[in-house]
Length: 56
Ligand SMILES: [Zn+2]
Image (cartoon, rainbow, N blue to C red; front, side):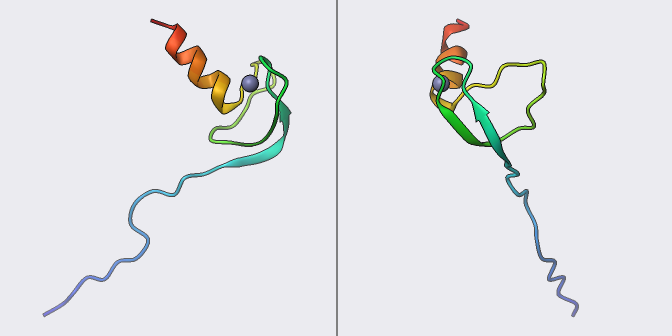
């Protein structure tokens, strides 16, 4: 009986490390869950959350 023991299932959360500043509050950001683009403002976690809530 063959038992398929595959490793590394699931996804790994990728984080991008760098040195940014929040466009809203100026807080330092060293890690982002997505790749930031130069022509888009970067927000810290708090402001990002706030922005999402403001949408509705
Ligand atoms: Zn912020």
